[in-house]
Length: 151
Image 1 (cartoon, rainbow, N blue to C red):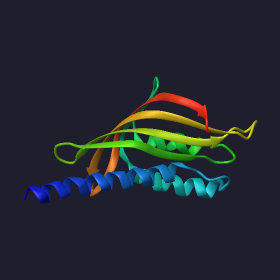
Image 2: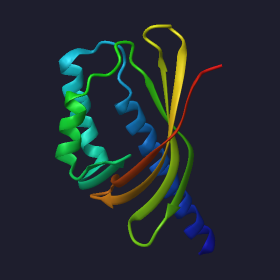
Image 3: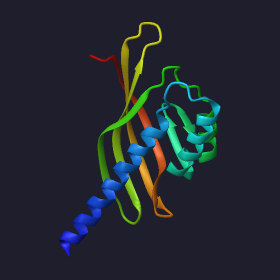
Image 4: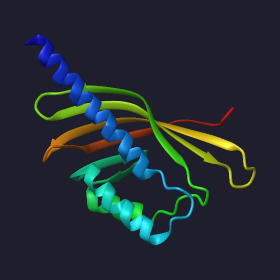
């Protein structure tokens, strides 16, 4: 019985990590794409957030999925795109259908003026809930970590 329980917990952790990888891909716009690509991305992103998600980035707070998606729809990514990765991911499964995740969001980009690669990293604490069979983000808190040119 203990082996089954361990495999179930590890299985849910793997599902959460895969889900976060999908979110990073959906949030990483490629160069160009246009308005139609943005509409498709916003529709896809809706599936990653709880309706009453709370996002805290520095001193700013977003308190609903619709508000978050509206902000993302208006946001114009860098013309050359960027890549978002979640690294140093630690998942702690909670009671019921909840999970706590700590991670670092690493954003790789190219400086528009110099052409040099840059990396920005932000530490994050997430709470995920399992709703209708899918893990969705319920809370996100982020702080600046570092910004440096890539080697």
